[in-house]
Length: 111
Image (cartoon, rainbow, N blue to C red):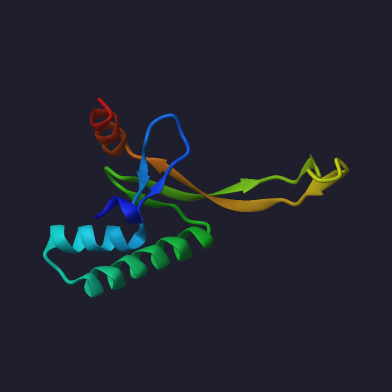
C-alpha cells in the first residue's frame, strides 16, 4: 500500500484513511481468499446491515460494535447562508457504537 493512494486526515496527528479497495485487498490477503470474493462478501454485509437498520432493527457484532437507527425529532435551526430560521424535519439516522474489544484494541494501538 503506497502512501500516494492514501488521504491525509485533517487532525493534529498524521493519520491516513484506508480506502475500500485497500480494505478488500488486506482482508483477501489475511483470509486467503480472492479480492473478488471478499468484495462480494463486503457488499453483502454492508447491504444486510443497511437493510436491517433501515427496517428499524439493531445489528450487534460482539467484540466489534453495534449499528442502530436513532430517531431525531423535528427541531429549529438556521440557514447558514441567510441566517433565517428554519424547521429541520424529524429524521432517522444510523448510529455506530464501538464494542469494548474494538475500543480496547484502538486504545492499545495508540500507546
